[in-house]
Length: 195
Image (tube, rainbow, N blue to C red; front, side):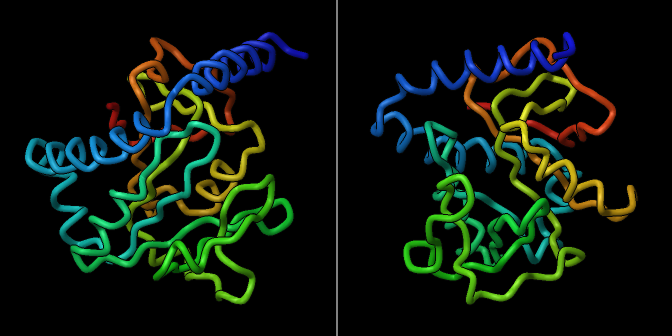
């Protein structure tokens, strides 16, 4: 195992251990706090506001294992007239699917992560304007340490650089590090929302 691979593995273990101590009530509060943080970012960042106002489709995720939930943020997007799409693992790749009713349309999928039911059709990737990125850890430069399977990085890399959606990493304070180890295939976020 290379030094970078070992360092990534070590960080993943540490953060996963810390997430075990977050209560359900805390996660519910963080879910709501993320909406507040997003609204504040819209007021402070004119470029984010411009992208968001034009956005029609936003990719979100269903949190598991102490991840920062974005259910309230997904509801905020839907209430603003945006479509929300969720990831679904398809072999070595990932696709996004529009989900209108998460409590009905999300089922246990790959790795036990809730994902859109197989009966739902994949969404056209090129129509996704913003992606809310989960992660184990982030740094101020936008670098992201994911679960280690590379699904998001491969999916993002499939876009030409000038056609990529806006990538917004979301995390809790203890997940924001001074530096995250990266390799050439790791794709950074465009911005981070930290609560």
